[in-house]
Length: 240
Image (cartoon, rainbow, N blue to C red):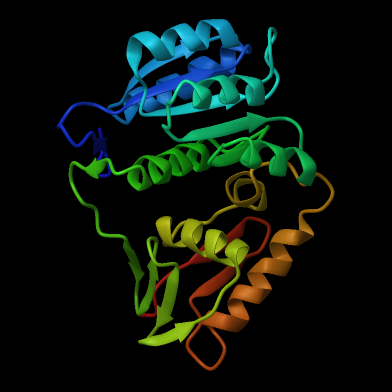
């Protein structure tokens, strides 16, 4: 259990419910959440999920949109109608604006599209738990630091040498990944998987594009921190 582990306000473990009819996905998410120190229940269909909710009273849930008996939005409707207001993250292979809007309109709190980055999924769930009035067991420092570059994961503020830098959401996620791995070469494939959460086969130039955006913002007029390692990837390192 790491320093960012969460706990309930009463000191107990966070309780999560994972609902998906693909056992491999269910077990993968459950394993990662148990590593976080959470208690996890799983269900393969809507009826089973409703029973688990009655018996385990989860603090947060991951719901697959496509279930064998009724879909995730119908399940959420039944959950909300019973008075349960714990946060819900939709897990779906349906990558369209309409599906996302429908899920959030139905009372969902967030969504992740398959195939997904497990690290991103866990981070999203942590955020939902924090916002649902549960508290941190050990408050981690939200500020990442590499040399004179800082990134605040809570406020989404970026500074270099005390000067504020405005970044887009995608640039922020890319920079956060780089700053969590300083002095380490990250390949385009690794960056695509972590930042975009799916395979941009044939379009890896999107990484080059966003690296160039970041380089202009954090390096222009200063000593370079963001380096290209030819044939290998990219690396962020402090200026000596």
